[in-house]
Image (tube, helix red, strand yellow):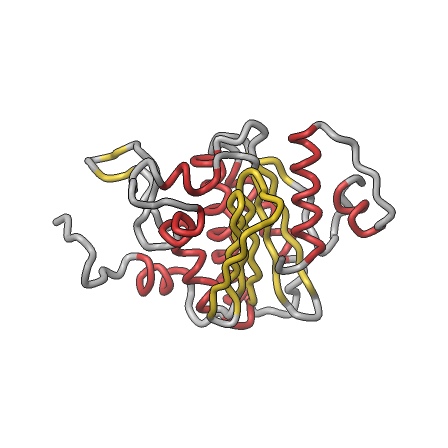
Length: 252
C-alpha cells in the first residue's frame, strides 16, 4: 500500500479483533504499534476504535490531530491553525463514513503517523463491514462492481444514506470527495480497498488492482503533505466544497 508500517499494523489489528486471534511477531516496529501500550510523544498515534455511532469521533479526531501537530514545532501560528483544521476535517470525515455506512460488527480502527524525513502524515482507517458496492447500490442501481462504486463515492454530493432532512440526504456526500480534493491540492496520495478491489491515487493517476485475497470490508489510507497547503480551510470550503458546478442543482 502507501506505506507498509501504518497500513499493515492497522489491518493486522482489526483482523485480530474480528477473528479473535492472538498475534505474535518478531518485527519490533509492528509489535510496538500493535501489542504494546502507547508511548506518549511518539510519531504515531495509538490505534483507536471507531464504534458504529458518531459519538466520540470528534474527540478521537482531536486526539489524533494533537499527536500529529506535536511534530510541527517550527510552523508559524497561522500554519498550525491551517494544518489543524485540515487534519481534523480529514480524520473526522473518514471516521464518520465508518460510523454511518460500514455496518461492521466490530466497528472500525484508525491510527495516524508522522514521517519526519518526508514531512508527511499518513492516516488509515479500516473496518470489516459491507464495503462500497452494497452501500452505493442503495441509491444507484446501475453500479455493478466495487470499482464503479468507489469512483461513484468519490464524486461530489454522492451519498448512500436514506435519511432525509428537508427532502435532502442527511449526509451531504462531501466526505470522500473533499478528501480527494484536499489530497489533489496538496500532492497527496491515497489507497482505497473495498472487498476485492484496490484503487490507488498518486502522481495524478489512478490504478485499479483486483485482489487475489479479498479484504472483507474497507481500508482507506492517505498521505498528506503539509508543505503544499495553499488555502485556509475556509478558503478551501468556499472554492471546492460549496462552489456550485454547472450541473449542480439549484435548490433555491
